[in-house]
Amino acid sequence: RRFDAFVSLWITFGGGTRLSVGSDVRPTLTVLPPSREELQQGTATLVCLADKGFPSDWSLAWKVDGSSSSWEESRSPGVLGGGALYSWSSTLRLPADQWAKVGSVTCEATQGSQTALSETLRRDQCSQ
Image (tube, rainbow, N blue to C red; front, side, top):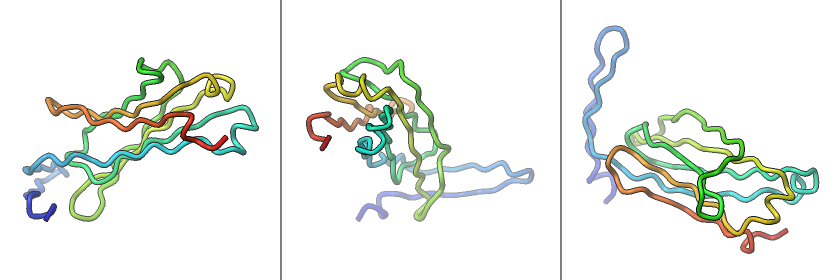
């Protein structure tokens, strides 16, 4: 079972300093496509959801057609959920006319020396 492989010891010191000792858990990534309504308004917003990872310092980055994105990105802070695992998200915004030229977008999660984890969404998989 997944939880058996995850052992975490939390010790809280004065002043709110927290030490965590545990195993790294790779989050599950999901890329959500822009909505049809939003595209009609001229913007494409894609969301990468990273769910149930540990520790909280995983970084999320976007690639568009295999290259680092130059479009607007934002990231939510990690939210601690059940089982002492974190969830967070990253948003990529680009003009709808640029989205129409894109072949694929990839959300990549990295943490320390861990092998990167990625999820790719091909535009032709989305209903326009």
